Length: 480
Image 1 (tube, rainbow, N blue to C red):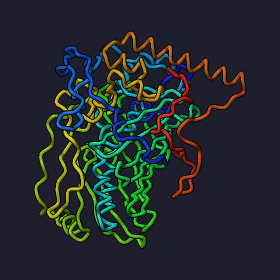
Image 2: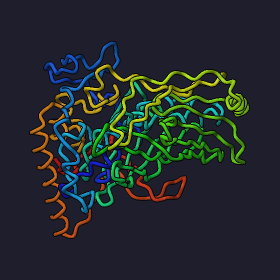
Image 3: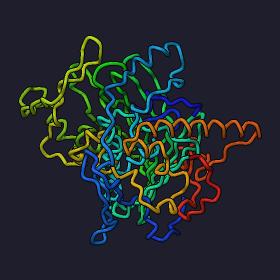
Image 4: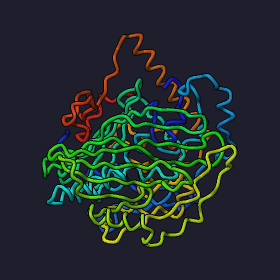
């Protein structure tokens, strides 16, 4: 990491400093996430230990051990103005701008709406399956809404696993490369219904007041019961007002989801904010067959919900809308705030809810965030559970797992001084390891993934080598 962290890309949910096994493991090894709290009052929610299971159902924590650390005492500009003309990757940001998660855990948030994958697997028709896959692709970026803290950069060799029997999946990721920074991940359904895998290495652009992260890397979903594979790339994410003003996020760009068996394609347009903010968060698109005939229309917002409708009904509604005899639009949300327009990109004031066209079918709706989310870095309930660690789990987890990182753990517990000290120690440890490899002319060896070609697109990809859940961690590096 060279002691440097890139604030700008990671604040968007991407990170430029980081970026098929069998089912041999017994089901009781589902210790990847256990319920734990610090046992002290935290100002966010009452902490305290709960039984790991109640009526056979795994229970997960509903709050973090300590509330979010205020960033009001820190100025991004005070740091940036000293670095004019320097590489953005050389700028070290105070830990106060982080959130207590690794980027590998941020990637795991793709799985919050895994029920859409299970639903897709159960659909008998390819069109219905594509609708569910499209909804899943949109839901994968929903957790980024209002998430303006940066995740910690993964150390080379860092891993994260998550097993959720209640949600029917298990997940493993690894930081496989440092230059360029690449994070690889692999997930499989516990009922052998799907595989979900990919690698993330975004390209960063700094535009003065905003930071844009263009995603690189293919995401692949395989529905095993139907012998189908779908591939796509996430939209571009932009964080506005990184120097001054109220931070706000938009996603834009075209996402194309391809069904490699049928040739069907879903084309989704994530709309840029537009004049007066009327297009903010909007997603519009369609599903077409291999002959480019439109089969189904999709619309909604990546922060709220996604709907679909027959193309003929959609066009009929749009014609009436253009004539002015459509239904009245919902009222704007009064909760939006205006930023300093003279010095910042104004936060769009028009934040309408989705206008539902009669006859539409609901494809997906975002989960309600916990009431104390604003005090917990705007985490979803799913996200709150990602860094849970119960006493004794160290014997089950790989020694490289994010939950064992002392800087992230320190920040989660509200000890910012400890978090900063540990972050510096880990960076120096990584630099020393890199110097030692250079001295011995040794190449870094990944543990759970290997370089190869995506079996469906032929593009370079990182593929899961298998074996993680057999839990032979003897060759794992000492990175903490």
